[in-house]
Length: 201
Image 1 (cartoon, rainbow, N blue to C red):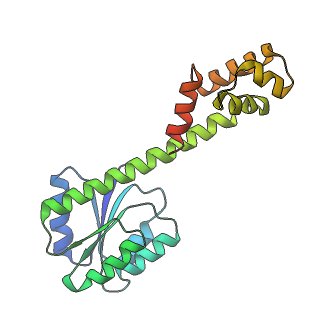
Image 2: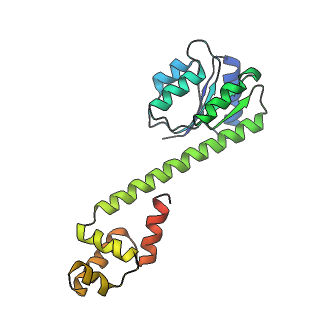
Image 3: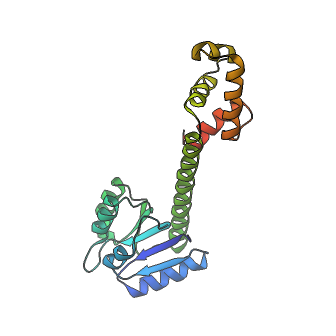
């Protein structure tokens, strides 16, 4: 799915100018004239980031932000604020907003923050994908292979593992080989790196 900068602002001129600015920097942009309009479109598969005006007719930016948080929104949110809205924007930051930018804003500064937000969203999705892939791999292991894996990661020798599990060393070697094959690694070090890297530790 293409990542978009979703721009929610009830000022047509601002939507047009910011849309043009972002697209000139290679960012795909979609504009919405109200919070309600965006909410009707939103789903948890959207990728990119959200630029959200604080004061709008109808539902306000912070009200939309709270609803999206309740629904598990993962899009980084950048608030567009007037001078008097800064305390409201700071409150939103404490609730997990990515940033806020005061209007009128520096074009390059805003574009840079949007690009950073897009990068954050991409990295979060990759991390989640990696964790899902790792869980899928681990789920292919038998109970015995998982027991062997735990002990291999603890640095135990095959002989010790065999004694602890009351099986022969040859059986441990078979389980170990199957384990490495399923996890796509060649050594215990690679296995440890895989589990540490893709579990987000």
